[in-house]
Image 1 (cartoon, helix red, strand yellow):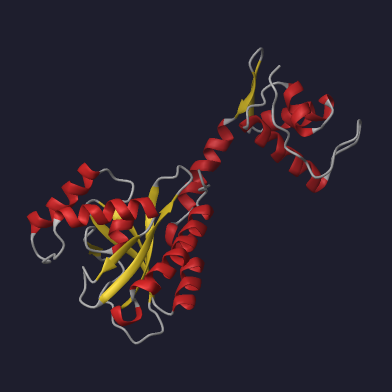
Image 2 (image 1 turned 90 degrees about the vertical axis):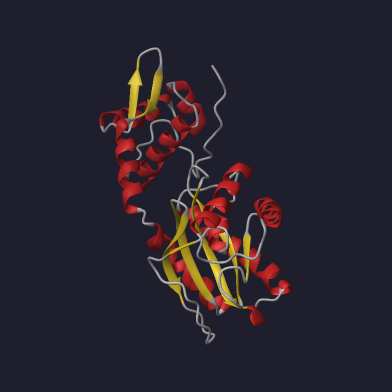
Length: 267
């Protein structure tokens, strides 16, 4: 029998003790966690949870009955289809703007600057939310607007996990469609992107809008993939290099908090 890590329940169950109410619910959740962690036999569940075999069996049997677990002879317990159903529904209900809103409001209040939330939309950054800052500064972005990836901090944050070939394609795409005249050549831009990818955040150094700078960081989900990004933008007079360095930690902290609410955990 393999060793299964203990769940460390807050209170052990004595033999024959009847589990009731909230404690029963907690024990049931601990059974699910134990199975997710690799426990498949009754002996492993009992060991991991510190329960008698009869109590572990009663809990597991109830979860099997309600399709939260499955049981196969000579194979053991496994997570059930009901969890897939709930996971799908949870994913539908977890709207990124709704989840991020409280964090964005705190970030806007703390920095007194304009805060954005956006996602990747093809070869553009789609802005989903914007909270104006307290400073009397006009930032031209709008909710629902699509902005370039290579010149915005938020756009760069969305592609930090890309490889250099992908970055080159995006840079060339912007050149091909014309429009915004970009003052950073490819070699310099790639150097910045490599640096940003290593640090986990990105800057806009007056590249997208004259005299506007920003600090941005990616938002990740349970798969640790980038699913969005947030940024703090302000006039260059309030965004010298020293303040941008300080803001990077605050912006990354907010991005990590949103990510945690989406199920992300640090590697």
